Length: 417
Image 1 (spheres, one colour):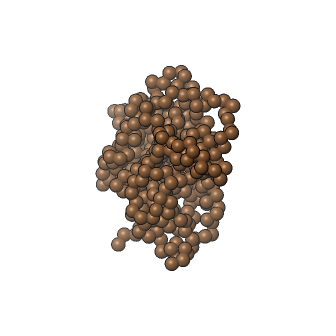
Image 2 (image 1 turned 180 degrees about the horizontal axis):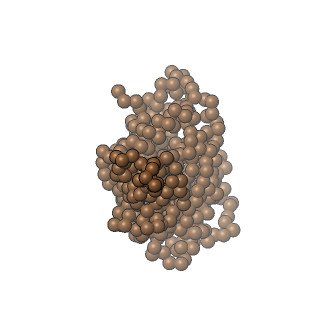
Image 3 (image 1 turned 90 degrees about the vertical axis):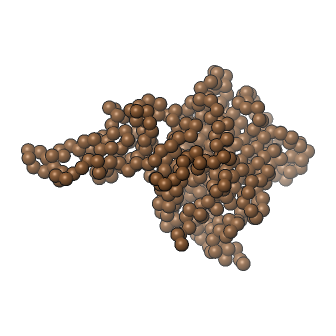
């Protein structure tokens, strides 16, 4: 079978071929919105620490649909689409804030909704001077905002449009929860945000963060300064669906001779390079497991990461078939002293839109988007680590978690029988 034949046939049972058309087909993107994001998945919305007081809100996304995430007067969390039930206008315009009198008022016709999305009042509902107004059978209870079911785990807020979904606890599963528990083992604080526009299909970033193979070949900083090398101890773990994954490296037992031989002909390892500011690495480890890099993904589009002493969530927000926003929330711990906080802020230079490491990931996505344009009859080759069973591996020379992502994607996206 030729490569063109394999692409046309789809991913196959082993998901070692990914048709390029999936990154550029508008019909596929439209189906993802309806079947994937609004379907049987839990979507990351934000952090509880971002909305501590009643009335506090933030804007999040389910796919490319904007939602309002609100702390209610009773202390619960509600989420609803940011679209007025009257004529569809954007209801909330600020990225975050506090709802005055625990209500949101549409700027267009002043319809007013509470923090759980229920319609409170309609101006001129009964007309003016005995004329006009809404029909006699108009019932405000039938015109609430479209809400999501909301659950939290360790301060992470998720929402789903599918009422039959299992609990968030079960959705995350026994392999993913321990990794979240490890990071959120103490109260966190938000240190800042980054927003990054990437001219590539959103799925290319999910492939990237599930791909340990590229990390020591694309990122010179990773390799040269010992944050991540293929010769380090590493593992790739996946949940039962293979949609969630964890990539982890630890500075344990690396053989310098083996490492130098591996990178002998690869320009990404430059032992002669030195940092003019070595204080970038003068931070006290938060854990005693010597983990230098941990990338966890929750299907469909959340990433929780540790790079050295930096911690962040990365939310992939699709904006169209060939563009997405990467929304970074940079984290610290409430218990950090001044030195730890300052060290984390220095290491913020590692990640983000212009990070010494992360800068290259956005460009890699752009290059794939451009390189595959018009090649809908072709497919990528995803065979590093083998093309057999999609299962956990104890090597970094693998793309097995990429195949796991496409397996789960295909299970949800394929047409019903």
